Image 1 (cartoon, rainbow, N blue to C red):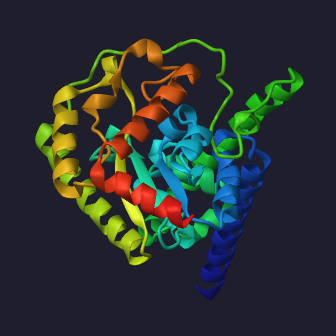
Image 2: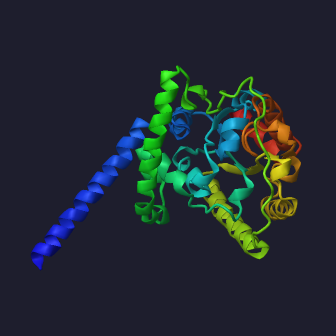
Image 3: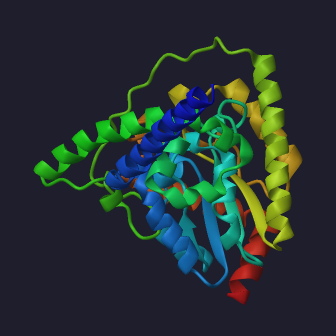
Length: 322
């Protein structure tokens, strides 16, 4: 019996060792992936010693923000931490919190999926990111760590698949998304390209009551994150991602707008309904703006900040200290 237990233990140890090694080795080989831009963003975040604006959220930020313009207009250093929505809110906040200092301003630019559709603990993409950025393990919570065993295999498969894409890019002397991302964390690779976004029929099969409960829970999660930000004498503002008109569920967005405004006023910046834009303004998905819309979206955010007496005063106060 002891021999069986010993051999089983050894077997599971070796299998686990091989899987974990494969997870991180394939991740290291694919850091040129979009998820690898976390290195640029983390380097920028840790290098800023003065008061700063930290933008967090999904890929709407990575593809649709002009951080240099935002920096010039508001007079504060800016870092764009956005990569992908399915990473989850918990990781967004956990990965920045050690670098949040007194009077820093964190702006969460939410996508509708963050409210009741994507768990705050994220999805498969989170583990693909960790394979490329092992330091990110320290930002995982207990639930995310417990869920990791069933995610590692898929991450390995996707990393291997991306290696083929990476090989093709290099053979054709094309840059990767990482190489087309500037030091603020903004992607610039779609400059000069028009919209290729194709609308899809809306799926109304979701349960509205279940969704409402999810929205309520997401609001509660955000409140907890706001407490952590405030505990560091910093500030949290809630803004919104642009969304293509054909993908906008107006009734759902109105519910989220009302809940966010009621909970986070006066630190709410605009609303989802104000960020519904024509389909032709989007590059390849309903959240990724074409390059020429980056400046307009950035100006919209600035307007949202400056038309709000509370947030305008906050920006002026913090920038004067800077």
